[in-house]
Image (tube, rainbow, N blue to C red; front, side, top):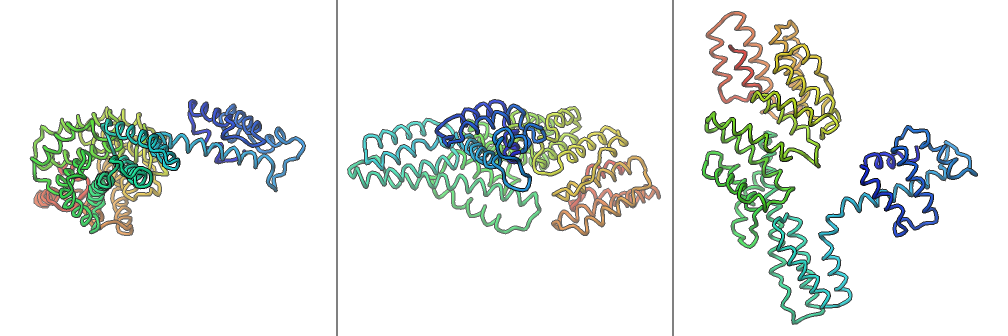
Length: 481
């Protein structure tokens, strides 16, 4: 194998990217050294064998013999093939940088041209570039925080150019620099404000910075009318909805604004905004007690999945997002939808964990449990040292639920093992109480059902329905019957 990283990267490229890579390496502009032909040939050999690290033709000794037959291969020293592969690796990295930054380079092309004409001191060319950039920029419906920053930078360049080469020009203004800088600043700050608040809620964190940050930005934004943009307005409204869950009118305004302004929201922002919308909608459904909203919530999740709002970089999905969707689908008894989702997101497309196979198996096990296939579900549970302890505890919980359903004698030993794990693990007090209450109530339900103590069972029902920290509340209600 000439270079592990080299083969790994090339193997990841699709057929279109591989064709472009060949053209890139064949270009004398990028590949301009004396060994240019050898570099092209090495790449062709790698592509011919699909960059398979184990292929015999790609072993160092064979490549050394092919390219440098006069020099014997030695496993103990660096060989000529290592230098050749290293140079090819550099070219591949250059290609990747070009590919990944192509859109950004295109966006910043006017800035690059303007800087060149500034060096020339050519007002005609400089202002021509500026006018075209401004016209194109204004014609675009969507702008994110980086777009506003770029606009501010190019307006700052215009001020600098006018001062040096065109003092009488009326085509630049420091106010424009400040306005676009503020628009980018508030768009990004409001986005961070709602994300911090949302994360703090889900992590049950006592992080005071998140509160102070969101309060500051929420109070400051309305004072800067020139800094207000469509995306920033939506984030600002999201913060208000987040802090005032009881205000139905505020939620309706937020809902209507997303529908009316979606065309103006940049693609990379829409996923965030729709995440908040789903959360607000679910909270609205819970607070209202209106069961008719349940079907609408299911339809909303299905629509967002179909539109790709749950995915990252095309067709991949983060582990927490997948688990959220699985839990939601099972709770709503949308079993066919859950099954299709697990086919759509195989282990190879799960992000955020070293154990995608085991996470996928856990999700399948939860689906099988919901179908009543307890033995099959138990076989799918695979314990690992998951990065997030909650997934390990999810395995424990599912096993406990299986043991309760099958009246297995191993129930108490599994409850003790889970209790020990919870007490020893570092987690928030809220989460710890939620798990320990689940363990305690599961024990008591089993005990008092066996004793047929209706009084104690009624007390447990009241506990389950209270606002105490508790996981698996719906399941616990179910086993009380």
